[in-house]
Amino acid sequence: MTKYSMSNMRSALNGIVNDESKSASDGIPSLGRKDIVIAVMGVTGAGKTTFIQNFTSESLAVGHGLESCTSQVAIIPCHLPDGTRFYLADTPGFDDTYRTDVDILREIASWLSEAYANKIALAGIVYLHRVSDTRVGGAGMKNLRMFKKLCGDNGLANVVLATTMWSQVNPEEAIKREAQLTSKSDFWKYMIDQGSRVFRQDAGVESATAIIQYIIGRKNPITLDIQVDMVDKKLTLDQTAAGKEVEGDIAKQRKMYEEKMDRLRKEMEEAMKQKDEALKEELIEYRAEIEEKMQKDREEMEKMRASKDDLRKQLQEQHEQQRREFETALQESNARIVREEYNLKMMRQTHENQLAVKELQFKLEQEKANAAYWKRKDDDSCCVM
Image (cartoon, rainbow, N blue to C red; front, side, top):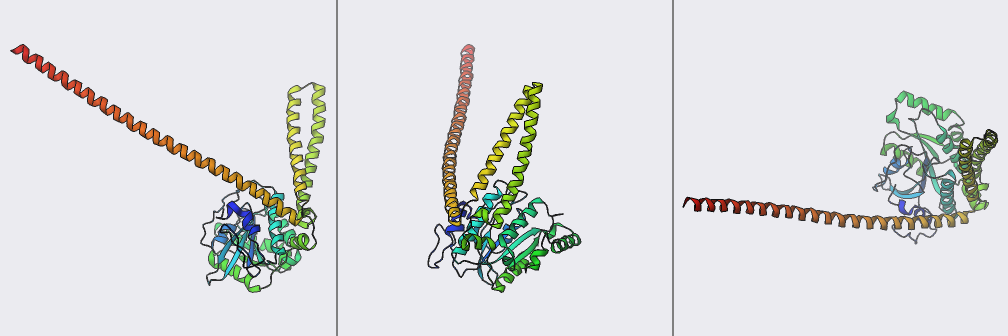
């Protein structure tokens, strides 16, 4: 995670200002209307953080495997080799390990709508995809669908579709996969037809620089559907195309749960007829689990019935609570460290004392042995006389 992670919400929302004389607090970068802002999107592990690292001296944590290092939108100040200053908005993917699609959509939609409301336009978007993937799986397709819904047709003109991880696959195979992406409407073809451009992020800072220079060089900021919907049309999140896409996924999941509940009711009736108490108890526990999941889905749906201002308020409160929890955990951790250091010091002192006691005991035994020796010598000499 970036150095801005502990206050990502402040970097994403409070960092947006419509007066360039203002500045954000806590070292968080503030954005003005003339700033060049580019969003970076894609599934977890597509190389978003690695891409951003090409343009900043800040140390960014890179995610490996399925766990994301980006949980909220974070703004990173960047520079091209020629000194051109711009900002990259690091966004979470819709396949986060610990957060729901609803929470991720709320984060992204809130930041995009607040930026648009404050006249801060996106210069473009870089959407990253691993060419090393043998196929576009469920997470990849979900991210792609959500990306299209967020952008809308008008927002696709300044989008760069960049393939990553070229070094991890045979070049011939990678070229075939790239061709598949660009030739199928379910993948990239439709977006390319709307003006999106395909790049290969295969040469580190060199290819990354070419991507950023292309976007900046177009000098044609884009407006996304989600921004128009939530700011101009004043729709709630669930009324937007992106919101409806997520609600559709939740509806499918709810239908699956309802079918499971129907089967459970029949199995419960059968268990009661057979007087199988063990099976009955097992089915009751399973039903409780499904009911809990259905309740969570209802809560997720309710969270999307929020306007731009509602989202901002809710997320600020949520992240303020997270900040307090973090500070409490940090204080507790520091207190534990102090206690452990004290215990270690006492153990060392005790150990040193034990060594000193043993040394004294050893010397005492030696002195006793010496005394006994000289006593015997003295006794022997007396006998001889």
